[in-house]
Length: 581
Image 1 (tube, rainbow, N blue to C red):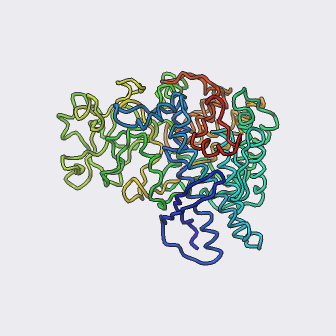
Image 2 (cartoon, one colour):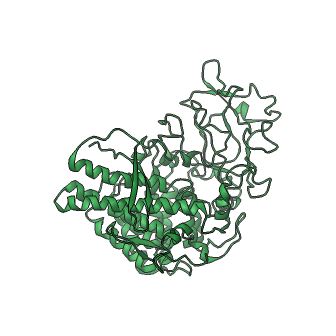
Image 3 (tube, helix red, strand yellow):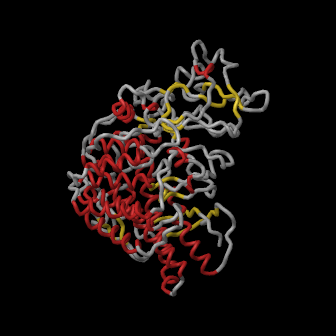
Protein backbone atom coordinates (compact mmCIF):
# COMPACT_ATOMS: atom_id res chain seq x y z
CA UNK A 1 0.00 0.00 0.00
CA UNK A 2 1.05 3.60 -0.50
CA UNK A 3 1.91 5.60 2.61
CA UNK A 4 -0.84 8.13 2.05
CA UNK A 5 -4.15 6.91 3.44
CA UNK A 6 -6.86 6.56 0.81
CA UNK A 7 -9.84 8.43 2.17
CA UNK A 8 -13.39 7.44 1.41
CA UNK A 9 -16.79 8.86 2.14
CA UNK A 10 -19.30 6.35 3.41
CA UNK A 11 -22.94 7.31 3.55
CA UNK A 12 -24.81 5.27 6.11
CA UNK A 13 -27.98 5.05 8.13
CA UNK A 14 -26.90 5.32 11.76
CA UNK A 15 -28.90 3.78 14.53
CA UNK A 16 -28.67 3.85 18.29
CA UNK A 17 -26.10 1.08 18.35
CA UNK A 18 -24.24 2.64 15.40
CA UNK A 19 -24.73 -0.30 13.12
CA UNK A 20 -24.30 0.81 9.51
CA UNK A 21 -26.41 -0.29 6.58
CA UNK A 22 -26.78 0.66 2.93
CA UNK A 23 -23.12 1.58 2.65
CA UNK A 24 -22.19 3.36 -0.55
CA UNK A 25 -18.51 3.94 -1.09
CA UNK A 26 -17.15 6.79 -3.20
CA UNK A 27 -13.42 6.47 -3.73
CA UNK A 28 -12.00 9.98 -3.74
CA UNK A 29 -8.36 9.27 -4.53
CA UNK A 30 -6.23 6.85 -6.49
CA UNK A 31 -7.53 3.34 -7.11
CA UNK A 32 -7.10 0.89 -4.27
CA UNK A 33 -4.00 -1.22 -4.54
CA UNK A 34 -2.50 -3.98 -2.45
CA UNK A 35 -4.03 -7.11 -1.10
CA UNK A 36 -4.65 -9.14 2.00
CA UNK A 37 -4.11 -7.80 5.49
CA UNK A 38 -2.34 -4.61 4.40
CA UNK A 39 -5.39 -3.53 2.40
CA UNK A 40 -7.70 -4.50 5.27
CA UNK A 41 -5.72 -2.30 7.66
CA UNK A 42 -5.61 0.70 5.35
CA UNK A 43 -9.25 0.26 4.43
CA UNK A 44 -10.21 0.14 8.10
CA UNK A 45 -8.54 3.34 9.24
CA UNK A 46 -9.09 5.48 6.12
CA UNK A 47 -12.83 6.13 6.66
CA UNK A 48 -12.20 7.14 10.29
CA UNK A 49 -9.44 9.59 9.48
CA UNK A 50 -11.25 10.86 6.38
CA UNK A 51 -14.38 11.65 8.36
CA UNK A 52 -12.52 14.12 10.59
CA UNK A 53 -12.72 16.74 7.82
CA UNK A 54 -16.49 16.38 7.74
CA UNK A 55 -16.78 16.68 11.50
CA UNK A 56 -14.84 19.95 11.34
CA UNK A 57 -16.72 21.29 8.31
CA UNK A 58 -17.83 24.92 8.58
CA UNK A 59 -21.51 23.99 8.76
CA UNK A 60 -20.83 21.19 11.26
CA UNK A 61 -18.61 21.17 14.35
CA UNK A 62 -16.41 24.12 13.38
CA UNK A 63 -19.38 26.42 12.94
CA UNK A 64 -20.87 25.12 16.17
CA UNK A 65 -17.76 26.20 18.07
CA UNK A 66 -17.24 29.57 16.39
CA UNK A 67 -20.70 31.07 15.86
CA UNK A 68 -21.90 30.81 19.51
CA UNK A 69 -18.68 32.47 20.76
CA UNK A 70 -17.85 36.16 21.05
CA UNK A 71 -15.36 35.73 18.21
CA UNK A 72 -17.70 35.38 15.23
CA UNK A 73 -21.13 36.51 14.05
CA UNK A 74 -23.02 35.41 10.93
CA UNK A 75 -26.00 37.65 10.14
CA UNK A 76 -28.70 37.04 7.55
CA UNK A 77 -26.68 38.81 4.87
CA UNK A 78 -28.81 41.43 3.14
CA UNK A 79 -31.90 39.43 3.97
CA UNK A 80 -30.89 36.98 1.23
CA UNK A 81 -27.83 34.91 2.27
CA UNK A 82 -26.92 32.64 5.17
CA UNK A 83 -30.31 32.46 6.86
CA UNK A 84 -30.44 28.65 6.60
CA UNK A 85 -33.52 28.30 8.75
CA UNK A 86 -32.12 30.68 11.34
CA UNK A 87 -29.59 28.16 12.66
CA UNK A 88 -26.68 30.62 12.73
CA UNK A 89 -28.75 33.39 14.33
CA UNK A 90 -29.93 30.98 17.04
CA UNK A 91 -26.43 29.71 17.65
CA UNK A 92 -24.99 33.18 18.09
CA UNK A 93 -27.77 34.34 20.42
CA UNK A 94 -27.65 31.09 22.45
CA UNK A 95 -31.31 30.48 21.64
CA UNK A 96 -30.63 27.10 20.02
CA UNK A 97 -33.52 24.66 19.83
CA UNK A 98 -33.39 20.88 19.72
CA UNK A 99 -34.11 20.95 15.98
CA UNK A 100 -31.32 23.37 15.06
CA UNK A 101 -29.58 22.00 11.97
CA UNK A 102 -26.11 23.25 12.95
CA UNK A 103 -26.33 21.18 16.12
CA UNK A 104 -27.87 18.23 14.29
CA UNK A 105 -25.26 18.18 11.53
CA UNK A 106 -22.37 18.43 14.00
CA UNK A 107 -23.83 15.63 16.13
CA UNK A 108 -24.44 13.37 13.14
CA UNK A 109 -20.98 13.79 11.64
CA UNK A 110 -19.27 13.35 15.00
CA UNK A 111 -21.17 10.22 15.98
CA UNK A 112 -20.58 8.85 12.49
CA UNK A 113 -16.85 9.41 13.01
CA UNK A 114 -16.94 7.61 16.37
CA UNK A 115 -18.78 4.78 14.65
CA UNK A 116 -16.04 4.51 12.05
CA UNK A 117 -13.34 4.25 14.68
CA UNK A 118 -15.26 1.39 16.26
CA UNK A 119 -15.62 -0.33 12.90
CA UNK A 120 -11.87 0.00 12.40
CA UNK A 121 -11.18 -1.34 15.89
CA UNK A 122 -13.30 -4.40 15.18
CA UNK A 123 -11.37 -5.10 11.98
CA UNK A 124 -7.96 -4.48 13.49
CA UNK A 125 -8.32 -6.29 16.82
CA UNK A 126 -8.23 -9.89 15.51
CA UNK A 127 -5.32 -9.04 13.21
CA UNK A 128 -3.44 -7.44 16.09
CA UNK A 129 -4.12 -10.41 18.33
CA UNK A 130 -2.49 -12.64 15.69
CA UNK A 131 0.68 -10.58 15.93
CA UNK A 132 0.32 -8.27 12.93
CA UNK A 133 2.43 -5.29 14.00
CA UNK A 134 0.90 -2.90 11.47
CA UNK A 135 -2.56 -3.80 12.72
CA UNK A 136 -1.45 -3.26 16.32
CA UNK A 137 -0.07 0.19 15.49
CA UNK A 138 -3.23 1.17 13.63
CA UNK A 139 -5.39 -0.17 16.45
CA UNK A 140 -3.69 2.17 18.91
CA UNK A 141 -4.35 5.08 16.56
CA UNK A 142 -8.03 4.24 16.27
CA UNK A 143 -8.44 4.00 20.03
CA UNK A 144 -6.75 7.39 20.42
CA UNK A 145 -8.89 8.91 17.66
CA UNK A 146 -12.04 7.54 19.28
CA UNK A 147 -11.03 9.11 22.60
CA UNK A 148 -10.39 12.46 20.92
CA UNK A 149 -13.80 12.37 19.22
CA UNK A 150 -15.48 11.45 22.49
CA UNK A 151 -13.78 14.46 24.06
CA UNK A 152 -15.42 16.64 21.39
CA UNK A 153 -18.78 15.11 22.29
CA UNK A 154 -18.12 15.70 25.99
CA UNK A 155 -17.10 19.30 25.34
CA UNK A 156 -20.24 20.17 23.36
CA UNK A 157 -22.94 17.86 24.70
CA UNK A 158 -21.59 16.77 28.07
CA UNK A 159 -21.46 13.08 27.26
CA UNK A 160 -19.26 10.34 25.86
CA UNK A 161 -20.10 7.00 24.23
CA UNK A 162 -18.55 3.82 25.60
CA UNK A 163 -18.88 0.92 23.23
CA UNK A 164 -16.61 -1.98 22.32
CA UNK A 165 -18.78 -3.92 19.89
CA UNK A 166 -21.13 -2.87 17.12
CA UNK A 167 -23.57 -5.42 18.48
CA UNK A 168 -23.85 -3.51 21.75
CA UNK A 169 -25.78 -0.41 22.69
CA UNK A 170 -23.50 2.40 23.71
CA UNK A 171 -23.16 3.28 27.36
CA UNK A 172 -23.72 7.00 27.87
CA UNK A 173 -21.18 8.53 30.26
CA UNK A 174 -21.30 12.01 31.76
CA UNK A 175 -19.25 14.09 34.15
CA UNK A 176 -16.35 12.43 35.93
CA UNK A 177 -17.26 9.04 34.47
CA UNK A 178 -16.79 10.44 30.97
CA UNK A 179 -13.51 12.13 31.90
CA UNK A 180 -12.22 8.91 33.45
CA UNK A 181 -13.18 6.86 30.40
CA UNK A 182 -11.55 9.18 27.87
CA UNK A 183 -8.44 9.50 30.01
CA UNK A 184 -8.17 5.74 30.40
CA UNK A 185 -8.45 5.23 26.65
CA UNK A 186 -5.66 7.70 25.98
CA UNK A 187 -3.45 6.31 28.74
CA UNK A 188 -3.98 2.81 27.35
CA UNK A 189 -2.14 3.69 24.14
CA UNK A 190 0.17 6.58 25.04
CA UNK A 191 3.24 4.43 25.68
CA UNK A 192 2.78 2.12 22.69
CA UNK A 193 1.41 4.35 19.94
CA UNK A 194 3.71 5.54 17.13
CA UNK A 195 5.93 8.54 17.78
CA UNK A 196 6.57 9.88 14.28
CA UNK A 197 3.75 9.26 11.79
CA UNK A 198 3.26 12.97 11.23
CA UNK A 199 0.41 15.38 12.05
CA UNK A 200 -2.17 13.55 9.93
CA UNK A 201 -2.09 10.55 12.24
CA UNK A 202 -2.52 10.03 15.96
CA UNK A 203 0.91 9.95 17.61
CA UNK A 204 2.28 9.86 21.13
CA UNK A 205 2.61 13.65 21.13
CA UNK A 206 -1.00 14.06 20.01
CA UNK A 207 -2.15 11.75 22.80
CA UNK A 208 -0.13 13.70 25.37
CA UNK A 209 -1.61 16.92 23.99
CA UNK A 210 -5.19 15.69 24.25
CA UNK A 211 -4.55 14.35 27.74
CA UNK A 212 -3.40 17.84 28.66
CA UNK A 213 -6.46 19.43 27.04
CA UNK A 214 -8.77 16.95 28.77
CA UNK A 215 -7.34 17.67 32.22
CA UNK A 216 -7.26 21.43 31.63
CA UNK A 217 -11.02 21.31 31.00
CA UNK A 218 -11.83 18.47 33.41
CA UNK A 219 -13.24 20.86 36.01
CA UNK A 220 -15.78 22.08 33.45
CA UNK A 221 -16.55 18.57 32.24
CA UNK A 222 -17.20 17.34 35.78
CA UNK A 223 -19.69 20.14 36.45
CA UNK A 224 -20.58 21.88 33.18
CA UNK A 225 -23.12 24.21 34.80
CA UNK A 226 -21.24 25.26 37.91
CA UNK A 227 -18.10 27.19 38.80
CA UNK A 228 -15.08 25.11 37.74
CA UNK A 229 -12.83 23.76 40.50
CA UNK A 230 -9.38 23.57 38.93
CA UNK A 231 -7.65 21.07 41.17
CA UNK A 232 -3.92 20.82 41.74
CA UNK A 233 -4.08 17.22 40.52
CA UNK A 234 -5.61 18.29 37.19
CA UNK A 235 -3.12 21.10 36.67
CA UNK A 236 -0.17 18.85 37.56
CA UNK A 237 -1.29 16.42 34.87
CA UNK A 238 -1.48 19.24 32.33
CA UNK A 239 2.06 20.28 33.23
CA UNK A 240 3.35 16.71 33.04
CA UNK A 241 1.89 16.00 29.61
CA UNK A 242 2.92 19.33 28.12
CA UNK A 243 6.41 18.88 29.60
CA UNK A 244 6.61 15.54 27.81
CA UNK A 245 5.96 17.20 24.45
CA UNK A 246 8.23 20.17 25.04
CA UNK A 247 11.06 17.99 26.33
CA UNK A 248 10.75 15.60 23.39
CA UNK A 249 12.44 18.13 21.11
CA UNK A 250 10.24 17.06 18.18
CA UNK A 251 8.42 20.34 17.63
CA UNK A 252 9.18 24.00 17.05
CA UNK A 253 7.20 27.22 17.12
CA UNK A 254 6.92 28.58 13.60
CA UNK A 255 8.62 31.93 13.07
CA UNK A 256 6.07 32.65 10.32
CA UNK A 257 2.65 32.60 11.98
CA UNK A 258 0.53 32.37 8.84
CA UNK A 259 2.69 29.63 7.33
CA UNK A 260 0.89 27.39 9.81
CA UNK A 261 -2.12 27.68 7.52
CA UNK A 262 -0.43 27.47 4.10
CA UNK A 263 -0.28 24.77 1.43
CA UNK A 264 2.85 23.17 2.82
CA UNK A 265 1.79 23.23 6.47
CA UNK A 266 1.81 19.43 6.70
CA UNK A 267 5.58 19.69 7.06
CA UNK A 268 5.44 22.56 9.56
CA UNK A 269 7.13 21.42 12.77
CA UNK A 270 4.56 23.23 14.92
CA UNK A 271 1.70 20.93 13.86
CA UNK A 272 0.98 18.01 16.19
CA UNK A 273 -2.40 16.78 14.94
CA UNK A 274 -4.28 17.90 11.85
CA UNK A 275 -6.71 16.70 9.22
CA UNK A 276 -4.37 15.61 6.43
CA UNK A 277 -5.80 16.90 3.16
CA UNK A 278 -2.89 17.28 0.69
CA UNK A 279 -5.08 17.13 -2.38
CA UNK A 280 -6.85 13.90 -1.49
CA UNK A 281 -10.40 14.96 -0.72
CA UNK A 282 -12.46 16.51 -3.48
CA UNK A 283 -14.99 18.02 -1.11
CA UNK A 284 -12.53 19.26 1.48
CA UNK A 285 -11.99 22.33 3.56
CA UNK A 286 -11.20 25.28 1.37
CA UNK A 287 -14.23 26.52 3.28
CA UNK A 288 -12.01 27.45 6.22
CA UNK A 289 -10.28 29.75 3.70
CA UNK A 290 -13.20 31.37 1.92
CA UNK A 291 -16.14 31.13 4.36
CA UNK A 292 -15.53 34.53 5.92
CA UNK A 293 -14.09 36.35 2.91
CA UNK A 294 -16.10 38.90 0.90
CA UNK A 295 -18.09 37.35 -1.91
CA UNK A 296 -16.67 39.90 -4.35
CA UNK A 297 -13.08 38.91 -3.60
CA UNK A 298 -11.34 36.23 -5.64
CA UNK A 299 -8.47 34.36 -4.03
CA UNK A 300 -6.88 32.98 -7.18
CA UNK A 301 -7.26 34.82 -10.49
CA UNK A 302 -6.81 31.62 -12.49
CA UNK A 303 -10.27 30.54 -11.30
CA UNK A 304 -13.41 32.63 -11.57
CA UNK A 305 -15.05 30.47 -8.89
CA UNK A 306 -12.49 31.29 -6.17
CA UNK A 307 -14.69 33.85 -4.43
CA UNK A 308 -15.57 34.22 -0.77
CA UNK A 309 -19.04 33.73 0.65
CA UNK A 310 -19.63 36.85 2.79
CA UNK A 311 -20.13 34.49 5.70
CA UNK A 312 -19.02 35.08 9.29
CA UNK A 313 -17.34 38.27 10.48
CA UNK A 314 -15.33 39.10 13.57
CA UNK A 315 -17.57 40.64 16.23
CA UNK A 316 -16.80 44.23 17.25
CA UNK A 317 -16.36 42.86 20.77
CA UNK A 318 -13.57 40.45 19.81
CA UNK A 319 -11.89 43.16 17.74
CA UNK A 320 -12.02 45.43 20.77
CA UNK A 321 -9.89 42.98 22.76
CA UNK A 322 -7.04 43.73 20.33
CA UNK A 323 -7.62 47.46 20.60
CA UNK A 324 -7.68 47.32 24.39
CA UNK A 325 -4.42 45.38 24.43
CA UNK A 326 -2.48 47.76 22.20
CA UNK A 327 -4.10 51.10 23.00
CA UNK A 328 -3.12 53.90 20.64
CA UNK A 329 -1.11 51.51 18.41
CA UNK A 330 -3.07 49.85 15.63
CA UNK A 331 -3.06 46.08 16.24
CA UNK A 332 -1.69 45.59 12.72
CA UNK A 333 1.36 47.62 13.77
CA UNK A 334 1.81 45.73 17.03
CA UNK A 335 1.14 42.06 16.43
CA UNK A 336 1.94 40.03 13.31
CA UNK A 337 -0.74 37.51 14.24
CA UNK A 338 -3.44 40.14 13.70
CA UNK A 339 -2.58 41.00 10.10
CA UNK A 340 0.02 40.34 7.44
CA UNK A 341 0.06 42.38 4.25
CA UNK A 342 0.83 40.26 1.18
CA UNK A 343 -0.39 42.57 -1.58
CA UNK A 344 2.22 44.96 -2.96
CA UNK A 345 -0.06 47.82 -3.91
CA UNK A 346 1.97 50.71 -5.40
CA UNK A 347 2.03 53.70 -3.08
CA UNK A 348 0.57 56.01 -5.73
CA UNK A 349 -2.51 53.77 -6.00
CA UNK A 350 -3.28 53.23 -2.34
CA UNK A 351 -4.74 56.72 -1.95
CA UNK A 352 -8.28 56.42 -3.31
CA UNK A 353 -9.17 60.10 -2.91
CA UNK A 354 -11.43 61.00 -5.83
CA UNK A 355 -11.42 57.43 -7.11
CA UNK A 356 -14.54 55.26 -7.31
CA UNK A 357 -15.83 52.44 -9.54
CA UNK A 358 -17.09 54.96 -12.09
CA UNK A 359 -13.66 56.36 -12.90
CA UNK A 360 -11.07 53.76 -11.86
CA UNK A 361 -10.58 51.90 -15.15
CA UNK A 362 -6.84 52.61 -15.04
CA UNK A 363 -6.45 52.40 -11.24
CA UNK A 364 -4.85 48.97 -11.02
CA UNK A 365 -1.53 47.20 -10.78
CA UNK A 366 -0.45 44.02 -12.52
CA UNK A 367 0.33 40.68 -10.87
CA UNK A 368 0.94 37.15 -12.05
CA UNK A 369 -1.28 34.39 -10.74
CA UNK A 370 1.72 33.10 -8.78
CA UNK A 371 2.50 36.46 -7.21
CA UNK A 372 -1.06 37.43 -6.32
CA UNK A 373 -1.81 36.61 -2.71
CA UNK A 374 -4.52 38.21 -0.62
CA UNK A 375 -3.71 39.64 2.79
CA UNK A 376 -4.01 37.45 5.86
CA UNK A 377 -5.37 37.82 9.36
CA UNK A 378 -8.20 40.17 10.24
CA UNK A 379 -9.16 42.13 7.12
CA UNK A 380 -10.56 45.66 7.35
CA UNK A 381 -11.58 48.47 5.03
CA UNK A 382 -11.28 48.47 1.23
CA UNK A 383 -9.76 45.34 -0.24
CA UNK A 384 -7.98 44.70 -3.55
CA UNK A 385 -8.32 41.81 -5.97
CA UNK A 386 -8.98 40.67 -9.56
CA UNK A 387 -11.97 42.15 -11.37
CA UNK A 388 -14.24 40.53 -13.95
CA UNK A 389 -15.31 42.03 -17.24
CA UNK A 390 -18.84 41.87 -18.65
CA UNK A 391 -18.15 38.36 -19.98
CA UNK A 392 -17.11 37.04 -16.58
CA UNK A 393 -13.37 36.84 -17.38
CA UNK A 394 -10.75 38.60 -15.30
CA UNK A 395 -9.22 41.75 -16.76
CA UNK A 396 -5.66 41.29 -17.98
CA UNK A 397 -2.69 43.58 -18.37
CA UNK A 398 -0.99 43.90 -21.77
CA UNK A 399 1.62 41.33 -20.77
CA UNK A 400 -1.04 38.79 -19.74
CA UNK A 401 -0.82 39.40 -15.99
CA UNK A 402 -3.97 40.06 -13.99
CA UNK A 403 -5.22 43.53 -13.15
CA UNK A 404 -5.63 44.00 -9.40
CA UNK A 405 -8.18 46.69 -8.54
CA UNK A 406 -10.01 47.94 -5.48
CA UNK A 407 -12.78 45.34 -5.22
CA UNK A 408 -16.25 46.50 -6.28
CA UNK A 409 -19.23 45.39 -4.19
CA UNK A 410 -20.91 43.03 -6.65
CA UNK A 411 -22.71 40.76 -4.16
CA UNK A 412 -25.85 41.37 -2.14
CA UNK A 413 -28.74 43.75 -2.61
CA UNK A 414 -27.56 46.76 -0.61
CA UNK A 415 -27.31 50.36 -1.82
CA UNK A 416 -23.57 49.93 -2.47
CA UNK A 417 -23.96 47.09 -4.98
CA UNK A 418 -22.08 47.81 -8.23
CA UNK A 419 -21.49 51.46 -7.28
CA UNK A 420 -19.05 51.29 -4.35
CA UNK A 421 -16.00 49.39 -3.23
CA UNK A 422 -16.15 46.59 -0.68
CA UNK A 423 -15.40 48.55 2.48
CA UNK A 424 -15.37 46.19 5.44
CA UNK A 425 -16.72 47.95 8.50
CA UNK A 426 -16.26 47.27 12.20
CA UNK A 427 -19.98 47.24 12.91
CA UNK A 428 -21.81 44.04 12.04
CA UNK A 429 -25.06 42.92 13.63
CA UNK A 430 -28.57 41.74 12.82
CA UNK A 431 -29.94 45.17 11.85
CA UNK A 432 -30.62 46.02 8.22
CA UNK A 433 -27.43 48.09 8.02
CA UNK A 434 -25.31 45.72 10.10
CA UNK A 435 -26.14 42.68 8.01
CA UNK A 436 -25.21 44.14 4.62
CA UNK A 437 -22.68 42.12 2.67
CA UNK A 438 -19.81 44.52 3.40
CA UNK A 439 -20.43 44.60 7.16
CA UNK A 440 -17.86 43.23 9.55
CA UNK A 441 -14.11 42.65 9.55
CA UNK A 442 -13.25 39.26 8.06
CA UNK A 443 -10.90 36.38 8.84
CA UNK A 444 -8.38 35.20 6.25
CA UNK A 445 -6.23 32.90 8.33
CA UNK A 446 -5.96 30.04 5.81
CA UNK A 447 -4.34 30.40 2.39
CA UNK A 448 -6.17 29.69 -0.87
CA UNK A 449 -4.46 26.43 -1.81
CA UNK A 450 -2.01 26.83 -4.68
CA UNK A 451 -2.28 23.14 -5.56
CA UNK A 452 -6.05 23.08 -5.93
CA UNK A 453 -7.30 22.57 -9.46
CA UNK A 454 -10.13 25.07 -8.98
CA UNK A 455 -9.34 26.81 -5.64
CA UNK A 456 -12.40 25.19 -4.05
CA UNK A 457 -11.47 21.50 -3.85
CA UNK A 458 -8.36 19.33 -3.53
CA UNK A 459 -6.65 21.73 -1.15
CA UNK A 460 -3.26 20.71 0.24
CA UNK A 461 -3.70 22.66 3.47
CA UNK A 462 -4.05 20.55 6.59
CA UNK A 463 -6.79 21.62 9.02
CA UNK A 464 -4.92 22.44 12.21
CA UNK A 465 -6.42 20.72 15.26
CA UNK A 466 -3.50 20.72 17.73
CA UNK A 467 -0.25 22.65 17.50
CA UNK A 468 2.82 23.27 19.62
CA UNK A 469 1.79 26.78 20.68
CA UNK A 470 -1.24 25.31 22.45
CA UNK A 471 1.09 23.06 24.43
CA UNK A 472 2.96 26.07 25.81
CA UNK A 473 -0.28 27.95 26.44
CA UNK A 474 -1.88 25.02 28.27
CA UNK A 475 1.20 24.68 30.45
CA UNK A 476 1.14 28.42 31.11
CA UNK A 477 -2.49 28.35 32.16
CA UNK A 478 -1.97 25.34 34.43
CA UNK A 479 0.99 27.02 36.11
CA UNK A 480 -0.95 30.26 36.46
CA UNK A 481 -3.87 28.48 38.09
CA UNK A 482 -1.37 26.94 40.53
CA UNK A 483 -0.02 30.38 41.41
CA UNK A 484 3.23 30.27 39.46
CA UNK A 485 2.74 33.44 37.43
CA UNK A 486 6.44 33.84 36.60
CA UNK A 487 6.61 30.46 34.86
CA UNK A 488 3.28 31.12 33.15
CA UNK A 489 4.53 34.47 31.86
CA UNK A 490 7.66 32.83 30.46
CA UNK A 491 5.61 30.29 28.50
CA UNK A 492 3.22 32.90 27.09
CA UNK A 493 6.13 35.11 26.06
CA UNK A 494 7.85 32.16 24.41
CA UNK A 495 4.86 31.92 22.08
CA UNK A 496 4.38 35.68 21.60
CA UNK A 497 7.97 36.41 20.68
CA UNK A 498 8.48 33.39 18.46
CA UNK A 499 6.81 34.94 15.38
CA UNK A 500 9.93 36.63 14.04
CA UNK A 501 9.61 36.08 10.27
CA UNK A 502 8.21 39.57 9.68
CA UNK A 503 7.33 42.68 11.63
CA UNK A 504 5.71 43.58 13.87
CA UNK A 505 6.96 40.99 16.35
CA UNK A 506 4.71 40.98 19.44
CA UNK A 507 6.72 42.27 22.37
CA UNK A 508 7.05 40.25 25.55
CA UNK A 509 4.47 40.90 28.25
CA UNK A 510 5.63 42.27 31.59
CA UNK A 511 2.96 40.55 33.67
CA UNK A 512 0.16 38.06 33.41
CA UNK A 513 -3.08 37.19 35.15
CA UNK A 514 -6.13 35.15 34.15
CA UNK A 515 -7.63 38.03 32.15
CA UNK A 516 -4.45 38.46 30.10
CA UNK A 517 -4.13 34.69 29.70
CA UNK A 518 -7.65 34.56 28.29
CA UNK A 519 -6.92 37.47 25.96
CA UNK A 520 -3.73 35.83 24.69
CA UNK A 521 -5.57 32.61 23.87
CA UNK A 522 -7.90 34.66 21.68
CA UNK A 523 -5.01 36.33 19.87
CA UNK A 524 -3.14 33.11 19.20
CA UNK A 525 -5.98 30.75 18.30
CA UNK A 526 -8.76 32.75 16.64
CA UNK A 527 -10.55 30.88 13.83
CA UNK A 528 -9.28 27.51 15.12
CA UNK A 529 -12.43 26.28 16.91
CA UNK A 530 -11.21 26.80 20.48
CA UNK A 531 -12.90 30.03 21.52
CA UNK A 532 -16.15 28.61 22.94
CA UNK A 533 -14.29 26.09 25.11
CA UNK A 534 -11.93 28.78 26.36
CA UNK A 535 -14.81 31.14 27.13
CA UNK A 536 -16.54 28.53 29.25
CA UNK A 537 -13.36 27.62 31.13
CA UNK A 538 -12.62 31.28 31.91
CA UNK A 539 -16.20 32.10 32.89
CA UNK A 540 -17.03 34.38 29.95
CA UNK A 541 -19.59 32.36 28.03
CA UNK A 542 -22.49 34.05 29.83
CA UNK A 543 -21.15 37.53 29.01
CA UNK A 544 -23.02 39.83 26.63
CA UNK A 545 -21.67 40.75 23.20
CA UNK A 546 -23.03 41.89 19.84
CA UNK A 547 -26.56 40.46 19.41
CA UNK A 548 -26.10 38.10 22.38
CA UNK A 549 -27.40 38.80 25.89
CA UNK A 550 -28.35 35.30 27.07
CA UNK A 551 -26.66 34.44 30.38
CA UNK A 552 -28.13 31.00 31.02
CA UNK A 553 -25.40 28.61 32.19
CA UNK A 554 -27.49 25.73 30.87
CA UNK A 555 -26.54 26.86 27.39
CA UNK A 556 -22.88 26.01 27.89
CA UNK A 557 -23.86 22.63 26.50
CA UNK A 558 -25.78 22.24 23.28
CA UNK A 559 -29.07 20.38 23.11
CA UNK A 560 -29.00 16.78 22.00
CA UNK A 561 -30.77 16.78 18.61
CA UNK A 562 -34.42 15.86 18.85
CA UNK A 563 -33.93 13.21 16.18
CA UNK A 564 -31.43 11.44 18.44
CA UNK A 565 -33.77 11.68 21.42
CA UNK A 566 -36.62 10.29 19.33
CA UNK A 567 -34.43 7.49 18.00
CA UNK A 568 -33.64 6.40 21.56
CA UNK A 569 -37.19 6.73 22.84
CA UNK A 570 -37.80 2.98 22.90
CA UNK A 571 -35.22 2.67 25.70
CA UNK A 572 -36.58 4.59 28.67
CA UNK A 573 -34.07 7.01 30.18
CA UNK A 574 -31.27 6.02 27.82
CA UNK A 575 -30.56 9.37 26.14
CA UNK A 576 -31.81 12.24 28.28
CA UNK A 577 -31.95 15.79 26.99
CA UNK A 578 -29.46 18.26 28.43
CA UNK A 579 -30.65 20.65 31.08
CA UNK A 580 -32.50 23.75 29.92
CA UNK A 581 -33.82 22.37 26.62
